[in-house]
Length: 440
Image (cartoon, rainbow, N blue to C red; front, side, top):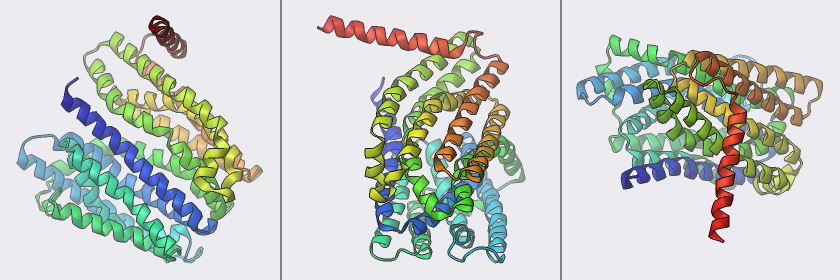
């Protein structure tokens, strides 16, 4: 492996780990500063931001990465300009709808969603160049800028926490600071010439149409995925109020750590699986799939067992004494983590074999299962442990559907998947035992 490849992998991993670490530190600080009700409202605000940002820019970024890789500077400028135009249309329409929603006579002026409706018409415009700059950096493999951008984005919640610590701890203040930091980040990106919004003048109908065709399935899948992630927060807020959103957020934040190894794994798994599929190498595809799945569980099983045992300590570390009673919720989430590798890797496979429609059906079904199970749990019990169990059910649904669609696509051998994973797991353990015996 060349030193350049090693360097790129280190930068890619750093781009996942460092922002996650900064995000966790800022979250721990906010939890200890804010009243649970204000924290819950802020989390509803941020969940709304993440959902709309992903719908606005997630699919657009994926399409840009594919098209901006073209070395023709004229075509590149047309693609980027068309992306700005298309993103601007989405921002304008969503901004109008949200402002109308804000002035409707419902809810408190300080509710998380109302504050979001007011601010997002501004925030959506500010963040569009940031997302396009990020996509350009990915396409150009400018990993150093990409790492710096993600770190700067992760500093935003730290600055929000600092203002809360200094006494500016109302929801309106927190949202204002969040938007203000994004304005500063936009100035940095524009001054450093990492993207150029003026390229919107270069947009063409053909490139806009091409972008729309590329993102239609990706946008649907990303939007549904984020609805899946956001449903718990919105439904708990609607049924039980923002204080319970804060209580649920502690174990949920810990659960996000489960996803970091899989994000890193996907950066190598996707191109390899896609290459085997394009070469019609069914045997190699099958072996790579089983290998990635096996190694994912080798990483996950010890970690999940440890997380279950150390749950009281971990919850206390993240949330402090006032959230200590969310330990059982986190332990339920540990079972969710057990399904996560199979669920995520089957999703990667469906993208690698160019079956985005199957992936969308999978995610849409999971979202439906999760929302129905959440509503049932909240309506009949009001117990957050059952809401967490709804996530376990939807992850299990994702595993089943992922395997079903992959087998339907005919890219795997007819053997059952999990027995192969167990056998591969045993072979790796036996090799490790043999090496340890020899070393003695």
